[in-house]
Length: 310
Image (tube, rainbow, N blue to C red; front, side, top):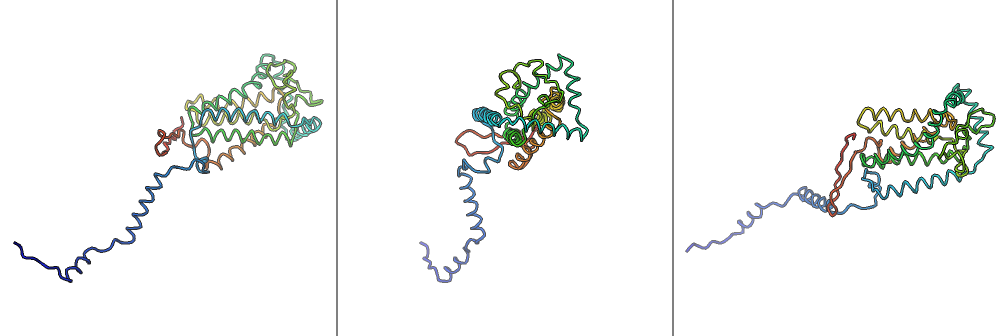
């Protein structure tokens, strides 16, 4: 049998000194790690400003409804603006004189030169009446499918451009050159009775004919052109992106639907749209990640970013 031992007071004091207390800094670090783990497991709030300002994958049903409602609202407001014919004609005379002063009043010469080539001017009339919508919708669909992370920011540019244009229609009614009194422009729409044009037949009664400033044909076509030139991979696609707004500018002048300065107004509206998108998303739409995806439902959200061009 062993000999029993007794612990002395000195031994107890020695054990106490051998187990020093945990430093305060270590306790703080441990508490911070625990809190970070709790925060990571906490579900992300559904409605936060940061959530709306970050790239997200668009929802198809929401985009269809949004575009349909937005265009209906735009058309309703645009056509509800009083057709102030006297003011619109007076403003057209002022624009025409201003362009003469600037030395850029060549729309009439272009209009008469192209108007003498029937097949060309009829083609331009149909271009003016259709591609304005077809190409813009096509670019939106392409963005949705190929660049979903950049879709919302690029769409905001288009919507802001269109929205600010409504102020121009209300504050500065403007007759197109073809409707000027004594302007000697050829109204190519009336001469050739272009089918589907909002300026011919019964459709002319439903559309505001004195909403030429700013030109959304230019605003939308330059938006399409920049988007295609920035994001398309093949060189021929980039070239088409550059040529499309140039062709649109030629068409709107040749058909006497707009002055040069209407195009400048469209560019100013587009600049506003890009500025608003840049401020909201903290960068140009084309510099945002191409793809933003999330994992399956029920797992914490984690963004997967792809910054490639296409």
